[in-house]
Length: 457
Image (tube, rainbow, N blue to C red; front, side, top):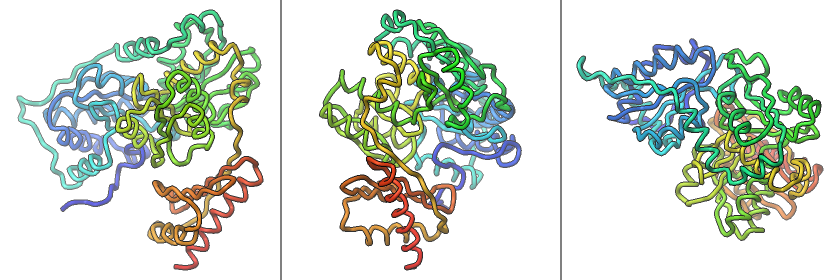
């Protein structure tokens, strides 16, 4: 029987509550399903700092070797460190045990291909089919896979980041003071060291690894980063940087204590990269700000729109031979280094930009185009979502639209993205315009279109 819809894998791997949804037994069986799908070779396995990680990592490793594949266990590491390790060590694939930004009781599994990018939806479906149909391979007793450990993967990753920072001399001369908040997780193993070795004075908060996340929850938001903001202003730092639980994203606090939206710091990096590499391609999801497109046009560059999701951005970067990608949640994909979102690399790039410009982060961000956005949501049963989108498209056909992920309706003075949630029975209406008032009007219009469409059913 061929299954047509995934039941376990979501936008970024498998997620669930540890020892409830994600148990050791589940991880053994899923590990052997992953290994059966890959077929042969060695898989790298790593984890972030959650309390359940050692248990679940051991279970996944047991499943992999039971299917006859080898394992290279690199232990605690950021997700981008594991992704960099795959091509570096020349292995077949990888598994990262992490629930990224989710609360401490959660954990999850990300499956990575040999190029360092998460596997495709088709491959996730193939693994699920093996799992549900219990078609995992069991190796003979004398062909069980070997387990090896590697303790230097984070060091290799750190050195590789520094190689790709061209402004080392300027950073050293600038003597930047930076506050790093890795959320008591694996970002603490990399980012403070990289910035310090580049010449910054670094203050680390929430720097000890603790899977209960005592300092703050792992999602970096203005609400959870209030303490970071106070410390940045209190010590007179040039900026602060915060990671999520697996350190593939970075959110920045400027020297005035303002937590900056991820797409603004991405736009600053975009401007920096394209100024040296014009006539290029930048990949970003349809939810990203028009500011990204405006800056690209200044450097005769093209925007490649994708669905919301880091895997879609990474695959488009490879397909389009793009120099850069980014998301509004703080994910930046600097493909000269690797085509995945990378929190430590992003922090190093911001340090380079501030040092080279001889301007403050607040000033640099103030020079970017200004837009305002509003996010709203409304309920809609999952089974009605496809029909609702069809009706909205019909009812707004006089407007230009982008239908890669939901529908993004373009008006003369802004846009609204109407997108069904992949995890909840809701539609999200995300609008942007040059004024807050117009953005609110567009977002509310998006909600009314969803409600009107449901009434037509």
